[in-house]
Amino acid sequence: MGSEQLQVLNALDVAKTQWYHFTAIVIAGMGFFTDAYDLFCISLVTKLLGRIYYHVEGSPTPGTLPPQVSASVNGVAFVGTLSGQLFFGWLGDKMGRKQVYGMTLMLMVLCSVASGLSFGNNAKSVMATLCFFRFWLGFGIGGDYPLSATIMSEYANKKTRGAFIAAVFAMQGVGILTGGMIAIVVSRAFKDRFPAPAYAVDPVASTVPEADYVWRMILMFGSVPAGLTYYWRTKMPETARYTALVAKDAKRAAADMSKVLHVEVEEEQEKVEQITGAQANAFGLFSLEFIRRHGLHLLGTATCWFLLDIAFYSQNLFQKDIFSAIGWIPKPATMNALEEVFRIAKAQTLIALCGTVPGYWFTVALIDVMGRFVIQFVGFLMMTFFMLGLAIPYHHWTTKGNHIGFIVMYAFTFFFANFGPNSTTFIVPAEIFPARLRSTCHGISAASGKLGAIVGSFGFLYLAQNQDPAKTDHGYPAGIGVRNSLFLLAACNFLGLLCTLLVPESKGKSLEEMSGENEGAEPNSHNQAHNSLSMPSEHSSWFKVVALCIGLPH
Image (cartoon, rainbow, N blue to C red; front, side):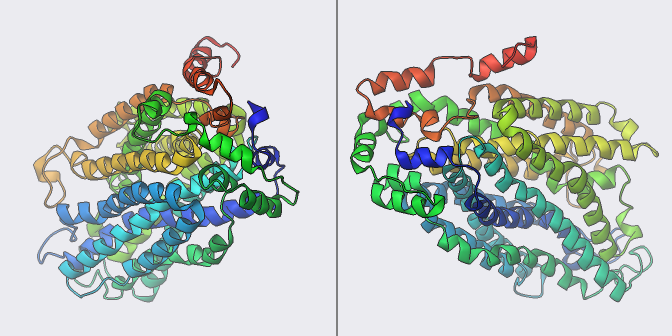
């Protein structure tokens, strides 16, 4: 179907890697840096918030956030993110990627700053305003998911498109790593400047008044890199695929891409009208034709992201609890408030440095070599193995002297999450749906993932509690324990592996080839499109998994 490809889109598909590709990666990536920083840095300061605002006189252990407050503080940004993914994903297909892109970034910057300026001086008012601003922060973050992925996919050439989208997503790892490093620097500076005894020595003096500045500074820092890129976001031209295939303005698409690519591009208004006006390209999201062509694809991208995020976010948000459970972080009563922040941040930074960040960049390097399906399938498989490797001999890992082994295994689960489904679930929805529905479908897939994050983060709060009611955190009922929780997460990973079979391979193909949009200009396009999207082939996921199992070339 290459003969029907618009010249402007073909020029993008075959373009060599140029400076504008790297500019787009940085501009989109800084938004993702802020996304990850803001979503994950809250886990670094929740213990500190409990000590400051929920201290109980005479208690042998430091104050902790009550279950409902902890669930709200940890989960409200995810609720906002889910809402933003659906709303801004839809809006990006209606108004254009560029117009909506600036809105989401400004919302993130403003609410990131406001999160650190929560009003009042009592627990209720501070937590209420913190949750309010983190909801709207999440709302802006939600919009960044479909828009960043869609913009990068529509700008990229088909040979290295996967690597470019993965590079944008890899900034999530940098954001997580930077969050830990900022927490280390800030807590260490305040700890040295304002020394305090351990909680067991003096419960009140162990939390110095200046500790209230620490969590605010950590939360607010995420706005800085994103704010610096706002101007460049507003200067990015609209993507040619939106301008030509959705707005139907061939002249502007050709003019914009001529400037970007530094080549003359012919405007083909007649061909644009022919392609966009064809009946095969007229179906909407809630049509039987969409279900027939892309229903299983959307089901696959949404369920894989949902199952992945149950495991990924429950681990990321509650690393500090797992580290405490295996003895890698001392008992809270043996530390002062700032020492606890410092140790939690150091542990999470080590995991990010050794397991999280490398996985992202392995994906960048290999996704256009191995393909999306293989990376996602193997990633889910290895996550299942490592989760079981943590859960089955869990009592061995918690024995003194074996903690390092636990950390290594735990880091490998993060490595294969990021060199696996955490990256591919972000990439594939931006490649396989039609331009007029691309941002919406990515938003739906991403929102499904955030629903999984909500299940993982809220559920893990309760499930990971000790089975002995006397050993649970204050205010929590008995749970099933960390070991049984790890078994559940392994099951989620295995189900994700099975759902990967619903997702098509998009390596090396143009976006229009994947979506069938070019075929709309041909007389028998309806049947050809149906056959090309529905019939199994050597490129299908089913073929690839069989090839993997029996050793055939694929």
